[in-house]
Image (cartoon, rainbow, N blue to C red; front, side, top):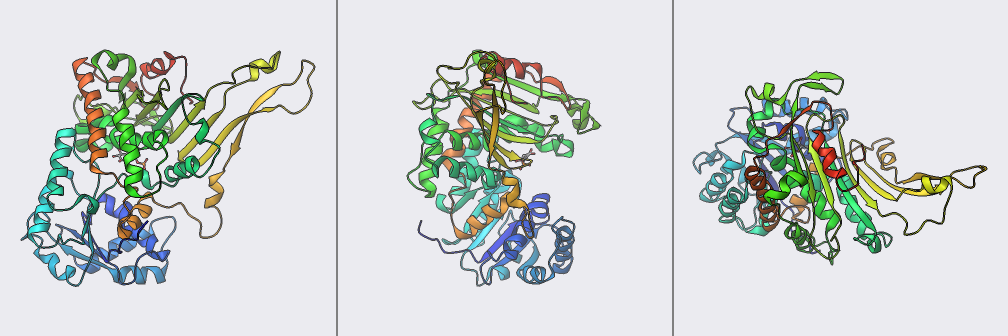
Length: 487
Ligand code: BG6
């Protein structure tokens, strides 16, 4: 891959917000600690709040000190000297004037919009009018890019009027997660799996993104989106694409993204008739989650709502490789445990040579990729159970484990924040792990079809007790096809 020139300045809009404080500034600090920030690289955080540089730096330092890794004095001295704060209104050229002196001398600035997507268009216009959106600048956008196809197009058009597509970096932080990238390595750096990765050998695929937390005070955003738009449209469809895509010819951004788009375009559209049999919407009621009593979503929201906090779907991919292999996706808030997992269920052996008890022991192989809370990859294989028994041999299923946990043990080892990888890639101008415009729009087109089918079928979310695995319908959804969730 031809190396793009590295950025020399990052302007962080929304610099006092939650994302900046919890994820972005710590990620930049760790990149600095590991020597990844280019010499002379500067970071200018900006927001409307009038804060002095000292007050801002003090906040950042305290946030870093509160993290389990603590703060290293020498790294902080270097990082602090790169960091500045300026109060600005990003929506007008006039409001951006205070940034001017900080951009002086910067050849390749990155503008990171950790802001409400409703502002993206206006901020881009203001950046252009202020003369900051030069040909060598880049822009990073957080999800959600719109609430449906129409609104996402409007954002893409507004941003695209100022920045060319190759200078737009749309973040899906799941693509920065270690195990998600490992999926690419697992599939394409081994000869073992690819010949088996199709409908001849795979029975079905399960994707689960379960969270124990509720929506809490994020409801003003969440109530407008719900689980379908907040998690399915982006993170889960991205995971699905990486599992289902054809091998790209190389790791060039467009090679990978072309393959992902083909998957999105092959998703079978939902119809009103299928809505009830192939999908489930749920909303958490009061219950017990993570050992504590939890309020209902509507109590947090303060009024009745028909937003789903849980969704389970059967997804079919209409192409040669995946014909007849259902993908079952589910995600929800206030579920019994935090778990992000991809399970590839292989078919059983075509003929069993075993009889007696061993015949009963025989189960099909499964590849389980755990992303959270612990990262691990396990291949469940059949073995002979040790020892002798009167009725002949017994079999057992045992995991062949990559034990990725060990990678994080030992001095200096730590789990990286997904944003570290993505920020570094944005700085280096590598957009392989960022989402291209046609991908976002293809994902929305399919999601809009699901939302339309729900509306036409009058499907309201079914209540489920906080701390349970969602409404009963979620079990029926998969059991109808003779399979079950791996709980
Ligand atoms: C965000 C969603 O994109 O991802 C949140 O808006 C969700 O609702 C979060 O909680 C999950 O991310 P992670 O990395 O904690 O799995």
